[in-house]
Length: 186
Image (cartoon, rainbow, N blue to C red; front, side, top):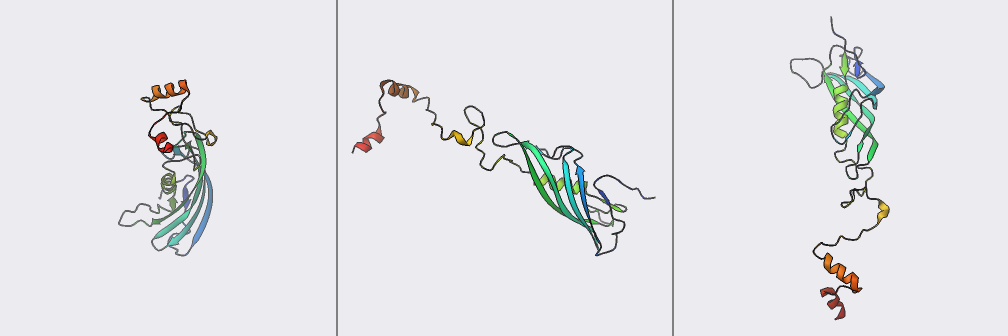
């Protein structure tokens, strides 16, 4: 007797096997069974995966194509703020009929298991360096606090070797003189 696997990612294909041209569509809402992703962003365990899949029977097996909509969570790679952003992934893979050669994806008994396919496609589409907004200014290198757009330009830090001269100039209220001021005079 054949084993029947079950689970939210397992779809029956008994009515499609060896019937080229037959097609069926599925719309699924599945919670992520575990945290997907190892970087600074990931799909959290229990996060909703909206899957739309089309199963088409072809001579070699069952062609599965579709999309996954999910939301990744983590932190901005520049300013370390918490972020949560949507991600849409397209996938397409052939589940081959069992044969002499091993395939990456096979029709098992009378079903296809989409979990590995969807997980791999989703994890590979997560951004490597996510940002909260495209022009995120990042962290202030001095204070370590997130910089804001309204902060404007900050004065350049004084080289510690010239700090004494700067204090002298401020004390006596004179502008520093140098090669630049001599050029202006001529």
